[in-house]
Length: 198
Image (cartoon, rainbow, N blue to C red):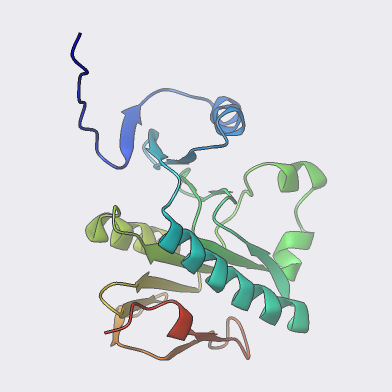
């Protein structure tokens, strides 16, 4: 019997009716996959990232983590952290940060599940299988749900889109560093280890 080749999109999008608890359990029971859910309830299933993307996520998290340890102004999260946005969407940015007072306002039960808030700061690293348009929509969704600053980093194109409330998206070509501005005071991301050499 000949093997059957099935061509699937990099991200599967399923329309399935799940309660918040059922969706949380689905994610917990399938830890080798990354799940998100749109505001309209569609479940998105993404495979683990490749080596380069995973390393870039790590480099970003390390730099954010070092700054956070030095300043102790909030809590940082890696790409496994889920956030239930006010819109009802459940998103897991590649890196995120929440102000300390917002974290402290959460109950122990809320902290154990997807956090019921939008992060103050989010980063999405565009991987080779990501759709730029869909990721841009996701970035705008974060801002619309309360994020104060967001970075969409396109490693291969050496381009960064900066998202802020009530402002047009700022596009930087070949930036060397990014400032955390007044959201992450004193944080400067060194992009030399992330961006693909020209």
